[in-house]
Length: 168
Image: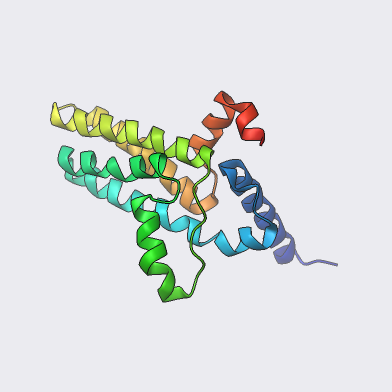
């Protein structure tokens, strides 16, 4: 009979697999998903920390430049700035695999983050701090959820708008 701890771990693994599938990593087998489960947290974790820093500083320049980071992920499946930092440096410290290319649902999420961060930057620039905090806070909250659970709001939205593409 399996212990409660073993059952919880199995459920977590299934939830992680499901969430990675919904981000577009469904083409990876279970072994690959288990190898990438922790490394795929790097980009949203670092991005979220930078966004929170920009919100604390209420800096339109910092958030505007910060919007470039997810934009690179939306435009270049293998070239997001934080993925490159991980692939070219950080992963070697941990002898971890290089990150796979970013699939379309997650790239769509990066595009949404870019728009929200640009909106936050403009809001702070024009003195609309509350709006800037809401817009940037949405990205920070989404990044925190993605980092901790692999559930991606932007990928969920992608699947609503593009159900046929997401089913592939």
